[in-house]
Length: 619
Image (cartoon, rainbow, N blue to C red):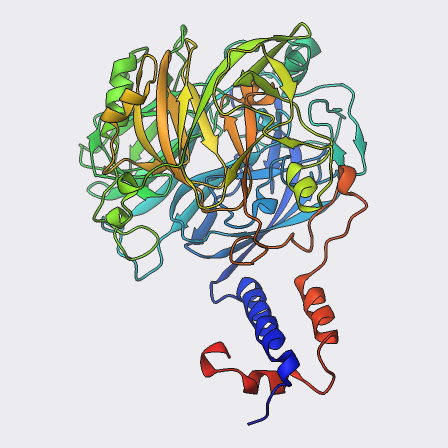
């Protein structure tokens, strides 16, 4: 058998391992799914008022993404707006690849008239999620859609296949436009995301419900983002939408006797919502990628940013029934309706709307505690979800996070541990990758509340890869908070009213707590989560109350390892946009590194010789 020269043998073994790892990334056995999206403005009338919406391929909401565990999802996004644009993937973990997360701390915006191709892999995930525009206040104009991940064919699912599988995107909505005339700076692809210019463009009409009267609101009331930039609070939203439609605008047709899966996501801007269907029970089966104990509810609280899957059976008399969504914990209760239509119905919806909870906190807490993991069900892999005994692992650190509201320089701001996030001029992940100094400082947000006055900073908290930590979110305010962590799911081990203390751990659920990525914190209360930090990257921890997020209630969690192994983190994507202080740098495909390494190998050694020199298991 030919031999590799001794001086080069170990190097070539390492080189082939590197190549094998590279090929595992780009030519994996998992299927590829390709999408091409054009993002435009268009006229929409969700509340009977003409507004400028953000459409994807002419649709509001945008198209659903259908995928299967481990799929490679390739989405080419053309930005036909007059301002930069980014899409983030709520609940998609982007394992080892925070470059693709689609928030300004990790990804450069897509400039007007340009495109960017997201390359996602839904590695070891199942469940119901959604995507949305992450820059500025664009989320208030649409651009969101459902993202579902189905189990692989041979992985058992703990319920029979439903007769239909539907996405229901619910959320509060303003009848004002999200932005208007204003200053906008765009240099070297840098998005100064708190000011946009709005230009008049040819608009495509989208008539979900043709209004009887089209109103044009004064500019002063149209610009939601300018109100925030001017240091003001927003009024309460004007209504609630179901899949982009207002009262009685949405209808779902079912066959009598059949069972259906509804994937419900709250894609709104601030309000917790209650979802219910007249005369029908809902069986909860999945929460943000976790199969749950199959508990039946007559109504379900869905806090902003959260996603649930329920099964409903069309087991009533042939008729039409109200679908009702109403706001929770608000002075004025907003309500909208849709219709569950039996295909053999000859009767229109009638009777009073089914009642639901309004301001009751205890009701919501008790329901939240009843949502638990189905330990015997499979997740994305065939082994049971309960095979990972999170409650038996010692935590290495406790982080306490407290929200606050106040003013900085005479303008309304929001903060976590007294720090109100200030966007940098360069995505933090790029600054970290290219080792660009002066963009952010690890440790710029304390790990516990310190009672200090509110101040602005580009807040980044450092944690160690493979640590197992506890985060306690404390809410000293009179509103329900909702928090999301990109890149992760976490176990919700406890929540209660009052002040958290170490003794609160005595009441933790250390056996079957639900694992999810977005969690609520009740007024004057706390919520505790456990996280296994197994995903290297720069990950956004943020309030789902979008005005609060926009005005500083967020930070970035830097999960760090000194390892440069592809097993821990992928290299920067070849097509990554570079902006801000990273503009002068270059991405380089991994194959260039391999070619460079090959040039160091004795010219007499070729790949055929290298392969023959390795054990069969390495080939």
